[in-house]
Image (tube, rainbow, N blue to C red; front, side):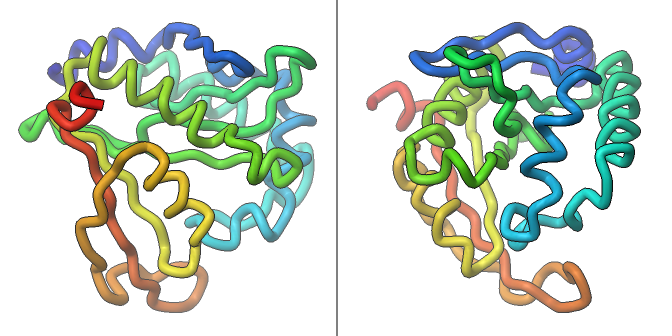
Length: 191
């Protein structure tokens, strides 16, 4: 998969369905649902961004993402509960390494659905798309040490722990250690 193909695909990302979820493009009208989780400090505690300060900020962010989709350089899906239509988070690729034919996956969800298997369900759909449609060789995920909830998701996805980059990022005024887990295509298809 090369840059041009990824750009073409993500200008209008395909809808991905699971048993309980629909993963679709983020929309401007998701602002209320997104603000409901993105404004909570516990959601962004182990992430690179601060809680959203207002729903107006969230609207501006979603407007900005529309231009990123048009450019084909934003790779996240909205995670929507199929039964209610409520947008409860995002899941997708945070970056691609074209030379290594690999990608990094990320996810963030509303605390109301933590511990209910939603994150692994959404991430499995994204991984399936990555291995089947994008023909990736490797998918990795990273987490800031202390984010045990995210690490459990990676374990459920069949990812192997690869190591810790000690104090490798400066986030919110402090150095943090970042761990990496990954799964290779052959491991994924064997499962």
